[in-house]
Image (tube, rainbow, N blue to C red; front, side, top):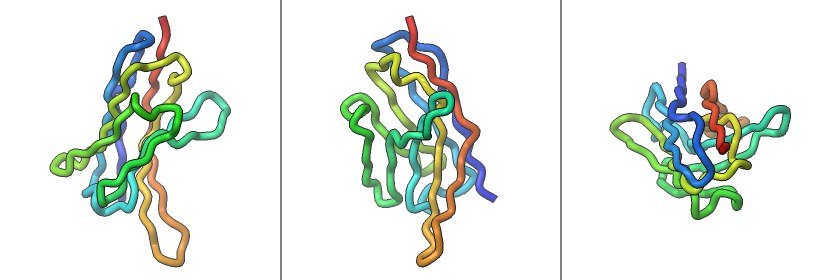
Length: 120
């Protein structure tokens, strides 16, 4: 069974930085994609950044130039480095791992989420 554990969230002032970690119970190469999503209250979960098994990355327009997604293959961990944080970045950040299954719908695994609060 797949387990994802996030860490690194907390309270930070505007302009500050945080690094989130997503530790997986199996090799990250087992998944087609690993990504970070965020959600505020009852709003829809929003894609923040994603990295493929091949190393390609994509970012939401709102975080380009400020956030960086990366991985440590030996530790089965994906990171999200967040710089120049803004109050609107405040959300619960969750790690997602997706496994494609050909003609079948993909499998999605989620971590429990970690709170990021950007405030003075």
